[in-house]
Length: 159
Image 1 (cartoon, rainbow, N blue to C red):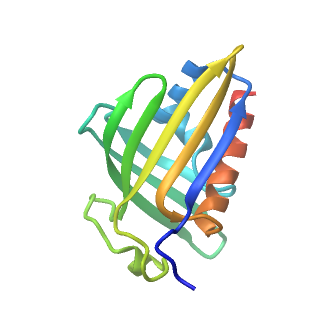
Image 2 (cartoon, helix red, strand yellow):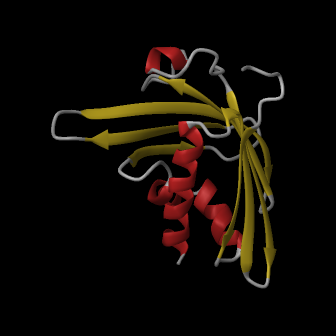
């Protein structure tokens, strides 16, 4: 049953690290590569111009004995308020940045061409609380599982 009140993926996590460290994990390409993506995927490319209007391009790769699958994503930073709030858009693309439809990559019908990631951070006693909302990705979808795996990797990276 489809309703207009779709719940988007919203994940809240606590990290045993100061807010600046978590901010850098989202905004420093080398740090981002260490945790982003579900388990089993690597991030060979992370290009980030973290200013309002700046662009980002990220690839995720999964290698199996049979083949290597690479997915590319691009987007634009809409809000950059260090260290508390980061908002960017995300779309599937080809390696050169040309947008492609999510359906052509096997995503379900109705998956939006452009989604939006909102990250809010706050610090208390040296620990950081993070809330991430991915607008356009329904809760309970594989996208939610991927984020949870990624945030497990983020916890390990800052431990």
